[in-house]
Image (cartoon, rainbow, N blue to C red):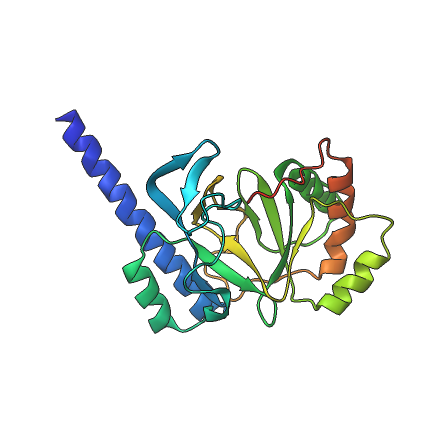
Length: 226
């Protein structure tokens, strides 16, 4: 009996998780006008020594489940019918945001450095928008920026740690409640419930704190992991 009840609970949890991904994708795309698409996801039964294996053809994928694949990034859309079609057929697919253009950009850094950076920004009284977290990395969403603007900003720095990654035009970011090879994707700072399109800070407002936190974090955290 316990085994049957446990199986039923797991099935209910899976159904709820699948519905949550579709609901989240629709909120991002339709209510907030953020272009999204389903990510590669993870193989249901295959694991490697590093953890869950990606469903893409690369057996040594370094970001399992955390990248676009069939469809490619250019397929990202805000069309509700397309989104429902995708997640009806792949309910376990992670939700991928196509960054840049009119959509949010992001700056990501190792989780330990991310916690330090948020503490420093809070101490400064800086207003932040949503922050996405995985067990290994935190990503601060910022207003859209161009590569030229970002280049000028970084050129003025003495050095920029390799652990910092910039998700701008042509980039992407996994959004909650996705699951990647490194674990659950969640909101460290969630958008306000029932709010309109979330407010986002300019990248200039946060980059100094992110560079400082990444530079001062032992180990650097430059390993490619999401």
